[in-house]
Amino acid sequence: PDAGQITFAQDPQSQGNPALRWFREARFGMFVHWGLYAIPAGYWNGKPTPHMGEWIMHDLKIPAEEYKQLAASFDPREFDANQLVDLAVRAGQRYLVLTAKHHDGFCLWDTELTTFSSAVDAPLGRDIVGEISQACRDRGIKFGLYYSQTQDWTHPDAAGNDWDFDPETQDFEGYLQGYVKPQLTELLTGYGEIALIWFDTPQGITAEQSRDLVEHVHMLQPYCLVNGRVGNGLGDYGQTRDNEMPDEPAGDWETPITGNGTWGFTDNTEWKSAHEISVTIAKAVSRGGNVLLNVGPDSRGAVPSAQVVELEAIGDWLQRCGASIYGTHRGPFRALDWGWSTASSDHVYLLVENWPAHGELVLPANVSVESARLLTDAGGTSLEVRGAQGGAVVDLNGVEADAVLSVIELTGAREVAPL
Ligand code: H79
Image (cartoon, rainbow, N blue to C red):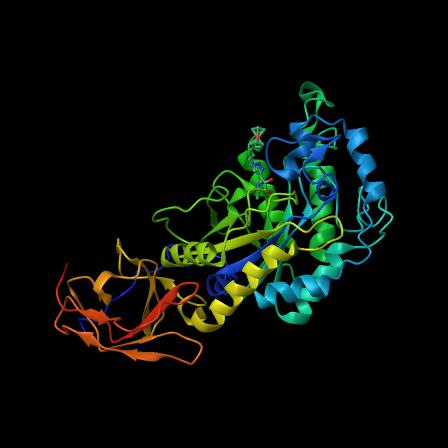
């Protein structure tokens, strides 16, 4: 082995669940927040909800019996799971996570535990988990489920609703054993391979209760990943807070991000651009993590067309530059003033946000490089590299920056001196 070859730290969690292998390669997924909250879409009797659309019941203290009436209007007959998953494919997303049950308790599958579902109380009468899981399977997209394990604002024994239910008399353990676990059994036995369970808001759950949920999931499907929000430091991979980009987390991790300022559909149209999304992906992958980007379909099941434009642009970018994202890991270069780095076993990738003045991209002073090329539609233009004995410079004069984010592939990058 060449002593000058740049080596990369192993993930400390690499001894973990073997399914982390697909998770590390995927790097980019689609989060789908869809439920009854798409009908009021941020307004209740004309009053706007102050925060995220899916929190409307909580934030406006809507009585459970009143909120549950929304199910009678949930009738997105035109919804086509194939179209939704095709969009994920076009966006370059390798996994999809659907809100089987969010904090409001409405279920998107045909569950024995309640009639409050898309299959029974809703005129739609369909099993959305079944439809989307099938569409994902047909397209080779990993399928995971979001499940709100602590909060359920329409369940008298769950957390989160103190305007209908009295926290003093609630039986939370009874809710976990008699409702949550049987529902997880349905989800993990009725829909084929489930790639991951995405729990949320672990406040108030004991370590024993979190461990019980992890063991329940793994007893039913050992290769189903459990996210860190199962609580108490457990789970197969770590999680940032919503919309957060950590500096240098250890191990395998994921950041969930909204496409605008809300998870459930509202009239908010401040869509993150393809460029902003690409920068988020570049930062996350350069630090060893994944990005789970949200879509909030409307009450008919449609993703707003302005967001589709950005998703398709990201997909186009990944067609050109995906070699720098899929299957890559933490990059060797830190604190670059022009962007981020990722690496595969063969190459180092430079994701350049700030195009350098004078067209000269300066690499860290202890690094030399054999060759460089630009990742483009056409398959790559060679770039001139100067200063091969360290402090190398990649010449970008006359090179046009990518419309989304420029990526340069380095071959033979090596340390010529300790930094
Ligand atoms: O599913 C999405 C969110 O609904 C969920 N996580 C993502 C993936 C989430 N659950 N809790 N939170 C996010 C934190 C919520 C905090 C707040 Fe509020 C809700 C701030 C404003 C509304 C409750 C009411 C806490 C403060 C005021």
